Amino acid sequence: MAIRAILFDNDGTLVDTHDLILSSMRHTVNDVFGLNLPDSRLMAKVGIPLADQMMDFATDISQRDEMLRVYREHNHAHHDAAITAFPGVVEGLRTLSEAGFAMGVVTSKRAPLATRGLQITGAWPYLDCLVGPDECPKAKPDPDPILVGANLLGVPAGDCAYVGDSPFDIHAGNAAGCMTVAALWGMFSREELLAEEPDYSCNTFAEFVDLMMGL
Image (cartoon, rainbow, N blue to C red; front, top):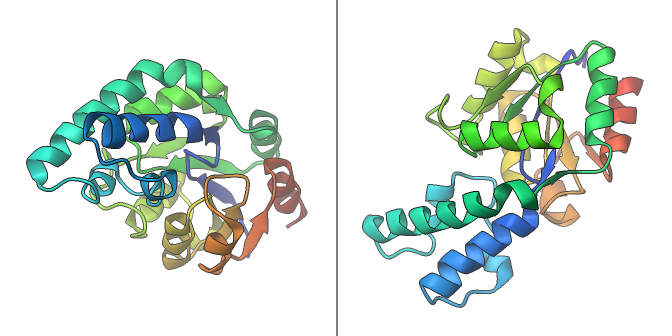
C-alpha cells in the first residue's frame, strides 16, 4: 500500500482516558443507578457512541438519557486533570508530520470534548481534521466516519492507515478499505483486536511510528 495519510481513533489510541471513562461508568451505572456491574462489563463497548453503550444498562430511552447526563457531568468535571497522551504520541506525531503524512482523528466522542483533550495533551497541532458524531451520523463499526475522514484529508481510504485500540476500530477500518493497525497499548486485549484481522499490530506508539517510516 502507498500510505499517504493516517487516521487515528482518539480514546485509548492517542489519549489515555481509560481511568476517566471507567470512573465515569462506575459513578453512573453502579453508584447512581445501583447496578453494581463488573468493570469488564462497563468497558466492553468503549469505542462506540456513548448513547449506544448506555442502552446496555438502561431500561428505556428516558433512563438512557439520564445516564448520559450523569456520565457527562462526572466526566467533564474530571476530564482536564485526568487525561494524558500515551507515551511517544506527541513526539511521534511530530515525526510523522515532518515526514509528510496527513493526519486526522475519527472518534465516537463528541468533537468539542475530543478536540479539548487533544489540545491539552499537545497532539492537536499535528492533526488536520477530526470526525466525531457531530460530523457523521453513522458511527464505528460502520466505515462511514473513516471515509469522511479520508475525504477531509483529500486521500482515498485505500491510501490511509487507520489506527485504533478497539475491535470496532479495526472492523470499521477494514470495511473502509484502509490499512489497519491495532494499537495494543490501549483498552482492549490483543486477542480481541487480532480477531478482527488488522494488517499490523503495534505494542507502542513508537513502534507504530517505526512501522510507518519503514513502509
